Length: 236
Ligand code: URA
Image 1 (cartoon, rainbow, N blue to C red):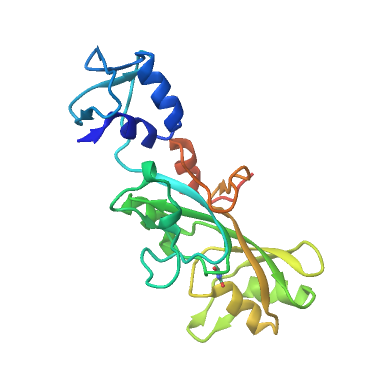
Image 2 (cartoon, rainbow, N blue to C red):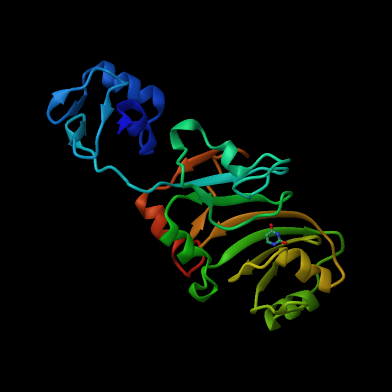
């Protein structure tokens, strides 16, 4: 049982304001009867239609978040603000969790979902879903670093899978990883004598961070975007 307005807004197509307007205009029906009360509780059994179109209620919700600096990606933290606290009330779900971690000072694309199977598909090393990061380091990037990343850098906890480093300017480059270990990029550059001074995740699978999302903002993903997320190829 959920409030009609909350359920509609949580589907991601309509803002809360648009939902209010549609209900007020009598464009929302429940089992064929106009629903005029936003607070009306609806069940999964009832068929809701918006402007005559039956609503297929999504059971799971997956959000794209532009993670800002200074926020931790753990589900709970006693000291710091967490990524889940950035989610507006209409998108909050009890079971929602971050699919993968970013360091507190790392920015960029994070996926929050209550779909455990999806999270597994994106994160399991065997699935080889690529993650791309823009990295800034304190010393000039070198072809030697590109070569070492491609070979697979040896870390204390074992050799990394081959990673791509594309140099963009003297101090910045794009790294593509197909696994996700603790502080992996920072440690890989550490092995090359460099310190990472900026790290931003650009994409996961074939899905790029929506550049209209300001840091701290999130929005639901469409079915098509979720399928991009699962892919092993890079974004176009
Ligand atoms: N590698 C890191 O070192 N930190 C991140 O947040 C992500 C990848």
